[in-house]
Length: 176
Image 1 (cartoon, rainbow, N blue to C red):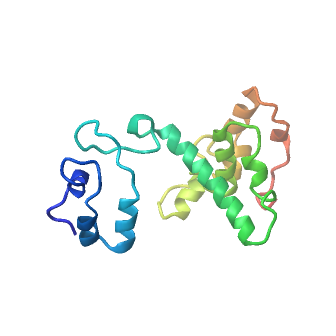
Image 2: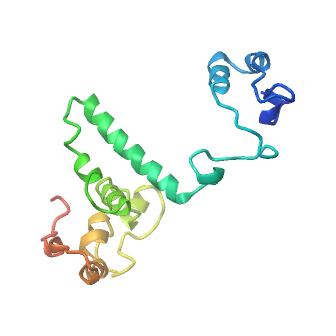
């Protein structure tokens, strides 16, 4: 699309910190041009470089990405509840508003969405692997098994300092 332009500074007025709006209008469609022109130009800090505006000092961060993903999930669950005419506090809000660390919220949400990489889920996505649990060698390795049924998982829950009373809950059927 832009064979001669490869740097952001080439879209700016020479020796100025303003956009070359005529050039942008020529090189881009109206929507893209308007979007580009709406971006504030910061004072120069050196040569062009890739920066991530969410991160401190323009640096990419897994932690910030994780927080952004959680925020996106909360917003998506709220907007889908509004779209369906439901009370946004019903549904996933109980989870997103829980007073637990974000990683616990995400783990619980992923488990409920069957998004834990259990052997059964991996096989469903087309990989030819055994669906038996790789930790205990017993039954079907699905999310319920990984989280509650596996003897290894149960030991982890029991040894944790968390007050998990439900680990003794009867999980004999995945239909529950």
